[in-house]
Length: 242
Image 1 (cartoon, rainbow, N blue to C red):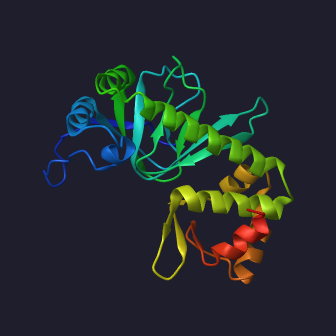
Image 2: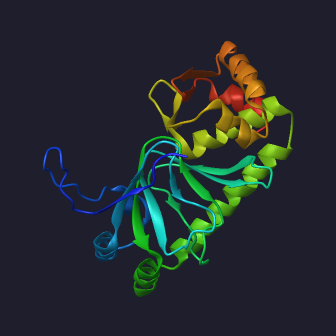
């Protein structure tokens, strides 16, 4: 299950070297359009939570009193069925927000794919800051974008064969978690197991392994230690029907 999230206030001193740890620019990236005054107000009420690989930032049914901005690492947002199987709703990385905005309880699990850190901000304070600056539309924009991504995920799971579905998921991750290099390669900024990728595409681990091997032979992707690089994005998108 992994270790529980480690909670620390912003501005704490690292016990190893004594240096002060400050809030990262990820907060500003998550709330683009908010003034510097508003950002300072959010940072002043934020605390840093760290969670090891496989650990949970929160679980389904937990009280929802804070919004989290991922500072480093990556999280999978998932739900479990009565038979214990897991469905992955989204994969989120640095500068993305996670947590319920309009519910008193969490509707899914947020589990770390690798050692991760997130800034925890009281939801009530976030709303106050947005209302004070007339920036409530930022939340509406976020919800609209999240809905679009969730809809795309569902279409990716139910459409096409397993090869196309996996190609769709890789292209989607390239859009939101990719970093394009000067050589034309798109490197995914998250570490992802074949099992998790398969769950996102509605495929078994064995099938996912075979499909990834095929994509590698064709020169479309490269993999190393759970990190994926798309070396021929045009071909992969054409195969996915995008």
